Length: 56
Image (cartoon, rainbow, N blue to C red; front, top):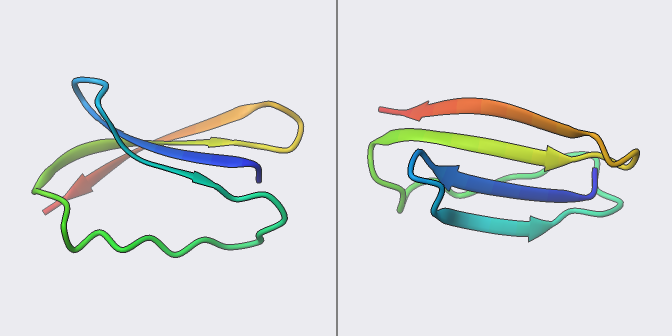
């Protein structure tokens, strides 16, 4: 993994984190409002993995 970005549905960046050389990442989501977020992870091979995440 190389880079992690969390955005809300309007595209506003909530969090960006450089995650080079990490096998796992822990993110504190306590301060985030209830809603839908997109998590984008740029992999070592420059591919991007995108997942939708819903905070209740």
